[in-house]
Image (cartoon, rainbow, N blue to C red; front, side, top):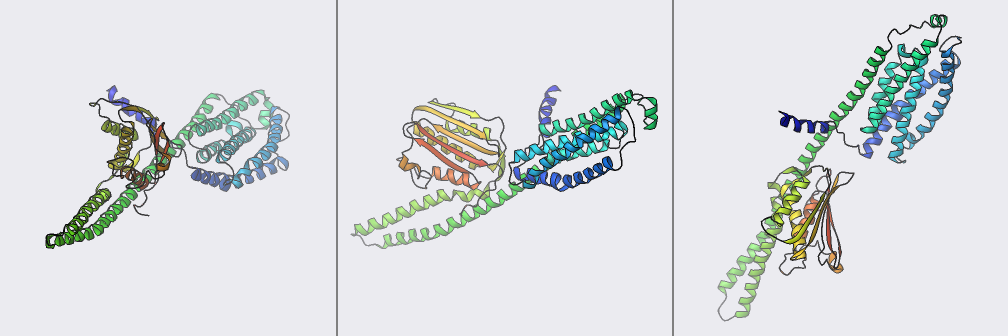
Length: 463
């Protein structure tokens, strides 16, 4: 029973993970909540509070600890206005200032708002004040403006602690008031203040968890919809690329077949005793056959439409490629060292394309090393979810004059090479919006790096 529960428990935290928002969406959410909604609301409440402090006092003329509290809140109110103005400046230049500064000012504004709301709650009834419900509004506001994760959880906790501070000070002030002042203010003494404090703190904490859970659910839904859209788009473009490749192969192969048949007919009708003409016709037939084989190999891309896009595990596919090029049953003096990051997004690709890239690069590294050497295989995930795979060897390296042409079709440095391996690797990477680069120093080896944007749509086969 425990073995069945363990995988489920391990997957449970992943359900509540919320990926970091991209900068565009983060700025858009902050602008909507902080600039479009919160700024007008703040202006309204500041004007109302200013009027109440100066023209219609919140409480009557009293001489007690509460009088000192009101004067303190009035003093804090002036600083609140100053801080709010300063913190609002980045909102009006939200697309020009760094996102980190905008997020920092948003968090500070939320903390300042929570402190002022706590002060106003204290002088308008404390635990009996209707302003308690505004703390729930602050938590909702934080869930939209503050990046999901640790900072949002801490800020919502700080907001709830502001209300806890109100409750503590409310009890302390009420205990210091005499009976006359309590009757004048119509204050009801709290028989058991602990119970309402706990219940209202639970309400605030439950609201924080609910907001976070809703965000996690909506984000998972959005990612699922985006992934489905990428699946459909990649399938459609790959099928279109396959049909285009097949049509191209058909259009080229037909003239080659006509040339081959014509050469065959001429060769049969050629009179004996003309070896030069017969030799020329034989060359034509051989070259046509060679061109046909090359086109058949290159137009293997026509099979693009026959496969299907899958969610591929990066580490699993790399290990499979290493096992294919360096099978355990065959001993070798070449060492393969691996370094993989802890987490990767799934790659939306056809299985054969990624395998072809990895196997080609590993096979090239093995051939470059010969009998012994070291191959370093690394896989990293960048902050923008781009997957970076690099394969490096400590072989002889690539001459500088050949590095620039290494990805050209039919260009090869091997005696029996076709010059198509790296060209196919480059094509397969670019088909998914990726890229490949090479770094090499003579005598120190070569390093090939492939980048796969996890969220990029594939490019057309011909541009």
